[in-house]
Structure formats: C-alpha cells, structure tokens
Image (cartoon, rainbow, N blue to C red; front, side, top):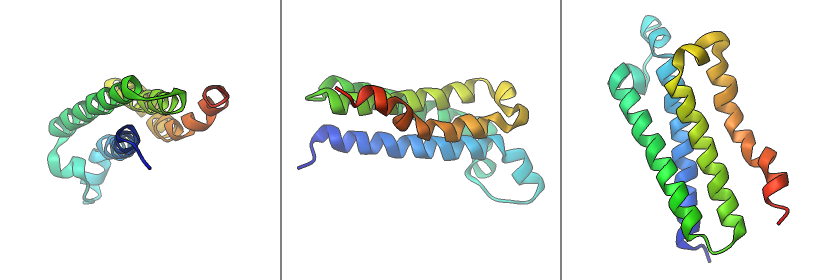
Length: 127
C-alpha cells in the first residue's frame, strides 16, 4: 500500500514536470507572442511566470526535502534526492536565462533532468 511519502513523491514529480513545461513556455514566450501562439507565459506575462517558476521550485525542493526526512528507508530517500536535484537544476536554468538561452541549451538541460533518475539510479539503487 502506498505511503504518505509515496504520495508526496508523486506530487513532487508532477511539480517537476510542470516546472519543466512552464520553464520552456517562459523561454519561448516572445517567440509565441510574435507567432500569435498561446501559452501560460504569454497569458500571465514574463514577471508573473517567473514568480510562479520560483515558487514552484521552492515547493518542489521543500517537498523533496520533507520526503527525504520522512522516508522510512533508503529507496524513497534516493527518489526524493533525485527529484530534488531535478527541481534544483530547473531552478538554476531559470536563474540564468541569458546563459541557457544560447543555442537553446535550456531545452537540452531541461529535458535532460528526466535522465537523472537513470543516471543516478545505478549509484543510488544499488543499496
């Protein structure tokens, strides 16, 4: 039966996925505006979208930390650590938009966070 921590970890993953989608929308808002496309970032505007991204990043990090602290054993702790790292990477991208906008590296790194469970899995899941 799923535990409270399992449920929180599912919410954290959903938060990371939404953080990723909103981050891409934020980076592409100007292009979307010019093409008369609709997105959350276009609808909300640049500053409100950035505030939501920052708030979401903190929620993801806090819930991942809470899950890590409450986890009954090493596996959910490992999942919490990986999901926290995923959210942290997306937060770093949003903190340095000029750097990550070059060559659209926000897309490579932003999508790359979903490889972290696999990359880190070989290390964390061997215990």
